[in-house]
Length: 207
Image 1 (cartoon, rainbow, N blue to C red):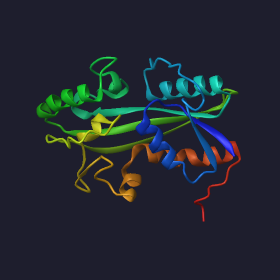
Image 2: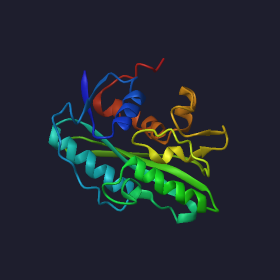
Image 3: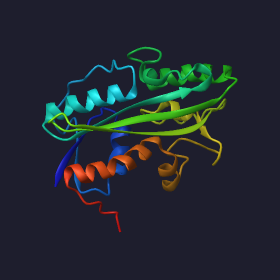
């Protein structure tokens, strides 16, 4: 079975990506599994720059095909902020609770509440070949956050999906809704054919 490194230190993201790739006959390897504790600074100006840099760094470091993503939340009234700075919007070492507190204040002031989550996922081989895909989901920033914090995803407590009248939170969404509205799932769906072709795989869910 082919091994695939999912290059993230975010446990929630690792689980989510692993779940979305469950139909492929690959062994998901985490950075911990690979014995890698080195980090790479995310100083790109775009999600794609960061995802490519991370995927290539860890593919070369591990000698395995690696996928990495970069994404964030973009608020229309704030001209797309925080965007690529979502994780470090209020400081490099800010915690989920710090961001939650900051967003409580931001959410009170917004007049235009339109927002979207965007992500770019890159597959890199140790040979430096790379492929990038993207996904996004649109919603609004709620004045009344769903305060059950989802570890690694503080912004989701504020992101509301008016069409289904639910927060973008795993405690609210059904499995079907999670796939239909998840920006990372939309990107993984685009990545699957590339993985199948590049790694010589067969999709076990493909009837």
